[in-house]
Picture 1 (tube, rainbow, N blue to C red):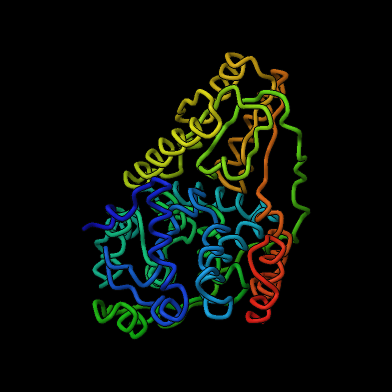
Picture 2 (cartoon, one colour):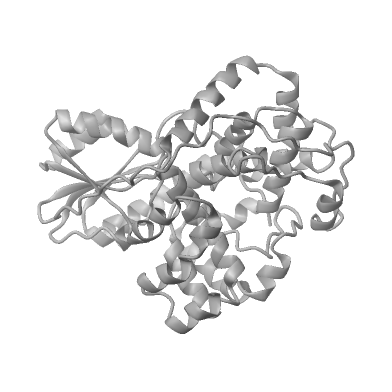
Length: 410
């Protein structure tokens, strides 16, 4: 079985994968989570990130399922791993300029490193570095890398190969099935010593040999990781207000790859007259064949679920083209477009442009934000450790964890 066989984008498949993993989310996960046994052999971790990233299944569903089998204390490592994704999103949501600065740096470096031999070798997996080359090919061929391996890869890219971190982050963003603008960008910044200023991550041969189960023993890796320098991260700004508008009037539902599960939180007190499911937000995002195929499949699965749940006509669109959305709204005879809120990233950028076009056509654009995000994002003002202190209380307020289980986590 190949890695790709394990990434069926259907929600039903994701729920089966979650059910299979839940028994292993406690001590087994904590003990083995850092080991990468190779492509098609990631059974010691959940590998649920592709579905969680597109919210085919949600963070809330995953945590709740785990806590039906384990206490918070027993599953602490895994639950924190799920909440890291939430933390990164909240952190970037309050500092959107970090995303725009990444895009600017990436674009500049793409010009200056065009046809650069070192960059081409790194992306093709022909550097001669044991392990690194295998991971570069694995990423392109499967759309996935083990989390520990992503850290090794980023460290070697930055400190051994001396390549721009923004181009490495872009390489991941183009090929990972679970390409998440916040998690990806900020994790690369962390390895480079930009996120926690001065604190870098250095990949070592001994660590790689141990946690790759002896598969790799690279030579010539950097022995020192000097932190990169950039403008200090801005102070957190207030989260955008989301008005919980009434959905009593017929509307057009617009679904993007940020949330392929609207039926779990977007109500329709009357009905949606029609729905659109978008596969992408445009260029420079998910260009790898495997990642594109996953999102295409997820969009089709979402389309079928929306049709069944809301009882409306549902169409697929390739991009968030304003003319297409406006024409769909007119055809459905509605003046409201509703969409799940998209956090900072390419989809959010495209939705902002779309919102201006809808407003000019006298069509109201309404966002719906999940309670999970509203609950946790405001606590991402500083580092993860202060954020972690709010996990138990946040889970209780989400109706997931009991007081006794919360005490177990403390």
